[in-house]
Image 1 (cartoon, rainbow, N blue to C red):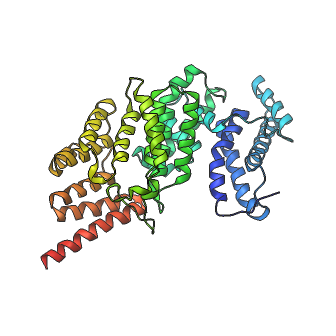
Image 2 (cartoon, rainbow, N blue to C red; image 1 turned 60 degrees about the vertical axis):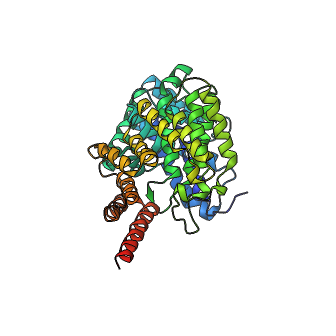
Image 3 (tube, helix red, strand yellow; image 1 turned 90 degrees about the horizontal axis):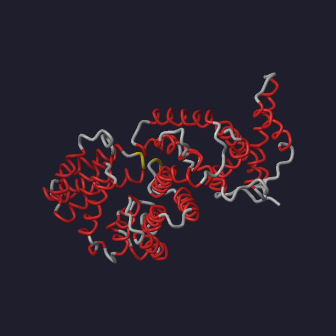
Length: 424
């Protein structure tokens, strides 16, 4: 029996893509070719499923199609070459045996996406290349979205991902769940990948939607999987807590027309109290272990926001103290930017504007819309409306998120109307 094609079918394909890639790459031990085969299987699904219906086992169907594509490729390679290495011959024989009738269920790993996640964070790769590759393969982000996350041009990111694929292919390392020691070595990159996937899902950097729930949910799911693997790791618990405490506000972040609603204007009765409770529990568990890391600190900041019944009840001095600690533990331009906001809320907007000056010469943030958006907000707070309007408009022109662009232009128009009204 098949299911009809509907509005959720494309989302299903997106969710299945990294799982299928994990299964095929693990079986055939050729990451780059497996990615091509899975892309062809996805195209076949887009072509056939709307007419024929979704199979009862869509994941198995995709693995079957991709596996046959890999088998065809292996046969083609054998036809062109007279001599093969012993390993290649063994793989080809395995393909010949499996290709006609692949036993989908028996070949499944507990979570092929999780295996894919750790495999992409390969020791042959630099940390940034490993993260970029995993975002593309396991997270399903486009090259443009990954480039936005890394604050680099799209062409640069495309080259980085291509080089990473070639390094994986040339390494010959089997596609399997790493040993405990290998997991420990790759874990920082894995956690950073999940962090970026979640961020892209919670606040999409490109397009008409403010949020991409499929990405946010997949990041949370994978974080839970890593937590199962490493139940006593404080930073794993901290990351999962951060995701839950942030995701808890999702329903309040957009209005009836999907417009962006900032944190201080949100209806807090819409926040998910179950997620907040679970997140605080995980954070408490992580902090009790003694060591404090990047994700625990961010989760602590999120918890302070979530525990405030009203925006005006927010404990900004505590948030400022946490950001000051975060700057020492993991300095970055985004941390400095958020620290400036917290400082403005505690010591006044002039203090925040003073701290922003340090970012004007930071090449990593040059041209990024958030710097102008924050500056505009602080300028509005000090009463410099003309400059605030200018920076709201600059920020709107620099963001590739349509909801954020609309929000920033609305703020500029509101101030412009107020200024004209007062002058009249």
